[in-house]
Every structure is written in C-alpha cells, then in structure tokens.
Image 1 (cartoon, rainbow, N blue to C red):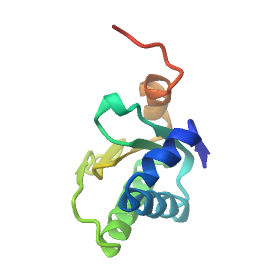
Image 2 (cartoon, rainbow, N blue to C red):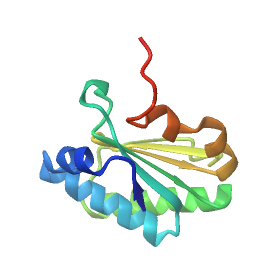
Image 3 (cartoon, helix red, strand yellow):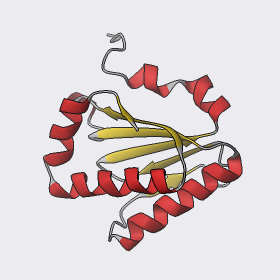
Image 4 (cartoon, one colour):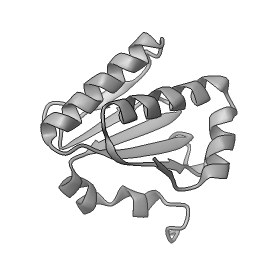
Length: 128
C-alpha cells in the first residue's frame, strides 16, 4: 500500500480513534481481497468531504464487486453501519462513503481515465 501524504493522514486518522480503526479495517480488507495499487490520500481539512480517500483497483468488474462486498461485510462485522455505496451493480467504479473515509474501487482502465490521484493529490495545482 502506498500513502500519498503520511503525516497529515496519520493526524487526520488519529484525531478520532474511530477513524483510525476504520482506516485499519478498510486497508486490511482491501489487502485481504487482493486489491491492487492501493493509494491513501489525506484530504485537506478545507475539503470537508472526508479525512482521507483510499483508491484501489481490481483486475475486472467481478473482482471490483468482490472487493466491495468483502469491504462492506468487514465494516458491518466491526460495527460500522453508517456508509453508502454507489456503482456496485456495474462495478467499473464503486464508491463507498464511510463518512471520515471515502473508498474508490476501480477497474484499471477506468482508474486511469479518471486519475483521481492527480486530482486529489496534495501536490495537484489548486484552482481558484
């Protein structure tokens, strides 16, 4: 797993123990499901969307769907039930909004097309 900005991510995730636990559950689940190219990006506090975003790929739509199902099951088992899921039917791009953490699961071609890492990276040029 790679982390785009480890220091702010650690601070964001540890600001509430629940977010840090959720981050561990999500990353563990993604690794167990053999998700590929896992990237974690700490979001700027002014974004107000979430503390961090996790982006990962599956080898196919079926793999992306299986990763999403496994992640949802792991979050439920850990007591996290306040989340929403979009895109699971087609599984080209599945978004799981878990409040403090947003997870994007992609097929590789779709991930390359949208290039969220570049868009949300702390080093991306800011627009006014």
